[in-house]
Length: 325
Ligand SMILES: C[S@@+](CC[C@H](N)C(=O)[O-])C[C@H]1O[C@@H](n2cnc3c(N)ncnc32)[C@H](O)[C@@H]1O
Image (cartoon, rainbow, N blue to C red; front, side):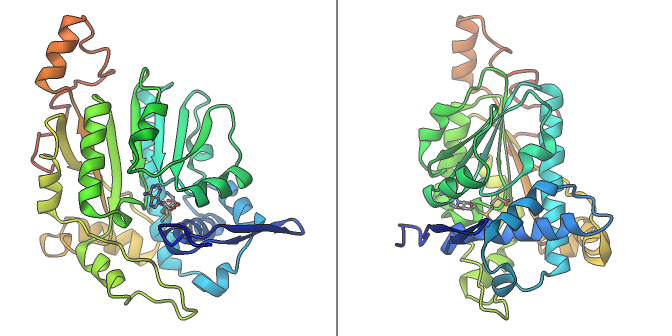
């Protein structure tokens, strides 16, 4: 049965494997998991992720039939993206060891096990079909919980313990939401989580357009679903204006990967002015500070600084409000 987002959740066991049929945007979680597992299985890989390999092995799904035997470049690209998020989560945990990480569109990401410091609290959010699959393959543990909820439904915000700092991440997800919904989500996070940060990645506009036109096609037939928008420097700058509680928007540096593409072409494309606009991966961090109104309220109850955690709430270090840097 197809759900409202073209997702279907047929699941049954075949021997020790859980047979999975996901379609539409839900299937993309198998696409990214598969490529991360391929990268993790590569000798000398910088992405250590035995759990991803374990999860792929536990799933009955024609990975090779759908995605081929694996594009080395795509696997390395997804590994670089995952390492970029890992670095940002570890940075957050250094300042907020007991903080809460919210992973929107978490899918079958195994990041919790890559970065767990033994104290972090983690909330994964995904659509019902994927959340149900995750619950079976990666059941909740003491500090990691999966919530079946759309990222666009503010219900997930009620589940977040914001008392020890919050980091919201959305790896490989926001490009599947209409841009207006993304603006609303960013504004909603700014209103609800002063002092927090939201980190997300997006393709460039040219790559998103290829998916919308159905031009990204695997020989076996798999076509990634339409990515509805792509990032530009101008758009990044405009995001800073969607809510007065936004203290800054900055580009997040993507780590260097392996091979010619991820080791040289991508890093060079990120710094050369001509190529920068076309680089395939844009990672953005939006910082939420206190609005003047919230600061007055906090001052009234003596809580300035406490609500914002260890960082300066407005105009946090290294962030210039509204400049996109
Ligand atoms: C490309 S996958 C990425 C999964 C995971 N973050 C990763 O990097 O492997 C996109 C994920 O976003 C989820 N997703 C799409 N729209 C969503 C929404 N409105 N709310 C929550 N999750 C959503 C999909 O179900 C899928 O799990």
